[in-house]
Image: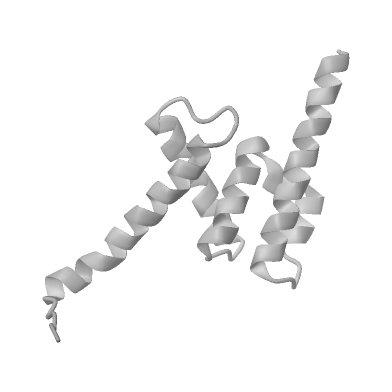
Amino acid sequence: MMAWTLTQEELDRMPSQQQRVRQYALARHLLDLPDPPADWPECKAQLDTGLSLAAEAGFTSLPAVTLLLEALHYVPDAFENTAVQGYLHSGALEQFRAERVLEWAREHKQHKEKVDELS
């Protein structure tokens, strides 16, 4: 059996490497959405804003944060809505709350598109 020994420097780098991998996974998700960010600065701005808002709301799991970023992609000011605030701060599980926020954002986006069509 092979044993590995990591140096303290390698151990110290791991959290930042994990954070970078997580950020790239979230960026890849944003790029797969309809009307994706046009370039890296725009994508990075969406990531930074979304991650900050998710952290403020207490979301930590990658699946839940991914859903919140998608919701913010569709409706950038979603967290200002009172219904969304209710979802964010309810006592429900993190994943369930994120799913409700995304559902709200999709419905809001569809409604806005229909209103725009009628105009």
